[in-house]
Structures are given as structure tokens and as C-alpha cells.
Image 1 (cartoon, protein in one colour):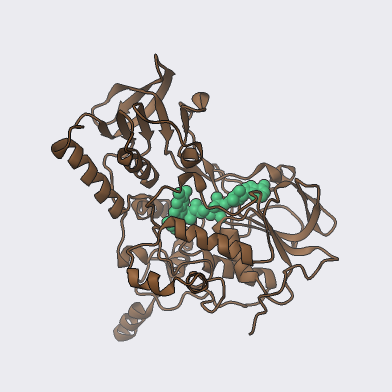
Image 2 (cartoon, rainbow, N blue to C red; image 1 turned 135 degrees about the horizontal axis):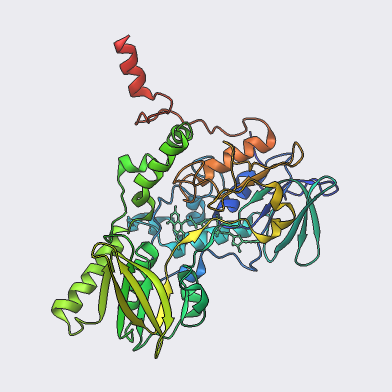
Length: 449
Ligand SMILES: Cc1cc2nc3c(=O)[nH]c(=O)nc-3n(C[C@H](O)[C@H](O)[C@H](O)COP(=O)(O)OP(=O)(O)OC[C@H]3O[C@@H](n4cnc5c(N)ncnc54)[C@H](O)[C@@H]3O)c2cc1C
């Protein structure tokens, strides 16, 4: 089928849209890219920010994508789409320079530039369009934009991402001297000569610590607090990466809930570990400070510690840390506390009018079916597709970029009620417990039989 990518996506100007997307991060942007130009589908995607940006508060110099650039908005599903990263490189006249670079990873800054480029080109994406309220009425969902425009759509796709997780002990102290890492670059805090505590031992914490230690006029002292017993690397490699495939998702979905939870816990470091290049750079700097420079007392790495309490101190804060292995409490003074404590799923306030009709689990996620439709008691034919709510239902890949294009294909097929895109898993190298037998298992079974 030939797709006309110049279509506006607003063919049904007189009636309800087929789909309204709330929030344009990478996930709804992928869906917008996949639906772009699909005949007979009317969709609009609304983003509150005036200009596209991807986690701008964490866009630290040198930060690198943890995912292959081939897993862009569209390529795994429709490699001939004009909204691919490769087409971005060609359009920007940097294809050959990029290819010559043989980069181990793409910088997050460049991937963000690609996403912004795509958002600009896709006519159904509208920036500066905050959705304030969603109610149910004639024709389906009624969306009220902050500028007063009302939009009606038969289906919704919720792409509002996750919200920063702030530990209860830090919540009363939020402000200029204690804030979530997602605001770090935007706040550009004054750190020179101060004692900074970074709470959280994941990749975000690592990137901030590395950044602080690299500043010419940096902090007097940096403490890095990590609840985990070690500063653990990303678990990666060809076999680990097999979990970021449709075949794994299918197998995962067939497991009982308890086995799914065990899988997710077991795979924690496949998504939450530290990027090897960050570890190397950090370790090199810490070695230099300790053995080759004159700053051995300028940092503290504190694994196996949980922050349990924060109190205002003489100049900043006094933090109580629980050291699990030693079963004792420790105290730490800091002028500035940066919370690299992750993000959590949530249902945004604009859905308050229909919140009670949604099934929301204890973690704040919408309960999803196989095709990413949220369970709710609304009228037949009106679906709420939820992106980034499938951590429990679809596994650890759900909050990642890896399968976003494939997921967009699954949603698009459900929306148009035909197999518009081939989203079948194909042969798998690994025969996952609970999954469809792959080529190797089929062969073994045939030989046995
Ligand atoms: C720093 C960082 C780096 C990451 N790097 C990787 C990586 O390398 N590889 C990987 O696989 N994953 C990575 N991830 C995880 C994941 O890919 C990202 O979090 C991704 O941005 C999730 O996309 P999203 O579309 O769900 O949400 P978001 O990107 O958070 O976008 C949600 C959007 O919704 C908008 N919005 C919210 N409410 C409204 C409203 N009422 N009306 C209109 N708009 C609204 C927001 O303004 C926002 O732009 C990273 C995450 C972070 C935080």
C-alpha cells in the first residue's frame, strides 16, 4: 500500500476524530508517525510544551542513548517511512559523517533533535496544546484544550509519560536546594564549593555525579547514595537484548502474574543498570582524584544506603541514611540534594472526570489488554490506548524505546480493525518459557517425534 504522508490526519473535520493523543513524547510521536498518511484515519496529537523536547532537564553533555538508533519511531515496523532516524540523517546532510563515526551509541542530544524534527514534520502533532480535561459525551471523548478549543474523538491514546518519583522524606524540602534530577539542567544550580548529595544509584544519578565531578568550578564534595549494594552495570549483550523483542513480550504475557513479577525483578539491570561508558568515565575520574590529583576527599560513594530522613541543617540538610548490611544509621550533611530517584506511572489529572471508570493498579498503572487498551467501563467502541503503562502487563520493555514502533503498529491495527501492519513476532532465537516454540524448539520436537 502507498501511504500519502502529506495527509493532515484531520480528514474528519466535521465529525469526531478516530483518535486523539494526549502528550507527545517519543511514544505518542511514534504512533503519530505510524498513522501519518494512513488513508481514512483522522488523528490529532496534543502536546503542552510549545516546542518539542525530550527530557530537557536531563540533557547532560555527553549522554548517550541506551538503545540502537535503528529502534527509532518507525523503522522496526515500517522501514520505508520518511520519519526514520536514517532519513533524518540524510535530510540533515550528515549521513556519511555519522556513518564514518562508527559511534558506539547515538548521543541523546542528537536523538532528541531527530524526535523534534519528526514532530515538526508530522501534521497531526500540535505543540502548545495542553489538554485540561477529558469528559465523555456525544461522539466519544470530549477534550478541552487550555486555549478553549474542544475536540471530540472516538478513541484516546494516553502518552503523558511518567512523573518524577520523590521520596516521602524529601517531599517537604523541595525547592532550590532539593529537587528531582529531571529539573537539573533547567535549574542549572549553583554548585561551586558546595556539598552536593545525589540520591539514586541508577544511570541518571551516575550521569549527574559524572557531570558534577567534571566541572571546572565544581562542588567541594559529592556524595552518591545508592540503595542497591553495588553500582551495577547495565546487563546487556545479544542474548539479554532478546527480551526487547515482540517474541519475548508474547511469552511474558502468557506467564502467571507471580512469574511475571519474578521475571521483571530478575531483569531489573537489563533496563536500570549503568551504561559501561559512564562507568568507565566515572571510575577514571575517581581514580584520578584519589591517586593522581589532590582531591581524594572530594567524593563519597555510598552503596547499600537508603535515605530515610531529611532535616534542615545549619547550612543545608542533614540526611539520615540506613546502611542495610551494617544495620546502622549514618548521618550526612549536604547543601544541595539532587533526587535521582526515578519516575513512576500515573494517570494525569485531565482524566479526573473519568478516573473512577478506569482500572488503576496499586502502582498507578492502567490495567491493559494485549493491544494496550485500558480496562474501563466506558461505552463499546471507545478505547483508551495507554502508552508507558504496560510495565506489569507487557514487561520491562514497555517504558523503553525498543518496541515503541511495534507497539504503535499493534495499536494502529486495533484502531483500523485490520492487520494494516505486520506485528507478528517471527522466528525467535530463544524459546522463552511460556512462548510459542521458535525454530529451534520446533526442530527439536520434530526430531523427537
Ligand atoms: C533521561 C532519560 C533517558 C532515557 N533514555 C532512554 C534510552 O536511551 N533508551 C530507552 O529505551 N529509554 C530511555 N528512557 C526511557 C523512555 O524512553 C523515556 O522516558 C521516554 O521519554 C518515554 O516516552 P513517553 O512518550 O511515554 O513520555 P515523555 O517523554 O515523558 O512525554 C510525555 C509528554 O506528555 C506531555 N503531557 C503531559 N500531560 C499533558 C497534557 N495534559 N496535555 C498535553 N501534553 C501533556 C509532556 O509535556 C511530555 O512532553 C529514558 C528516560 C529518561 C528520563
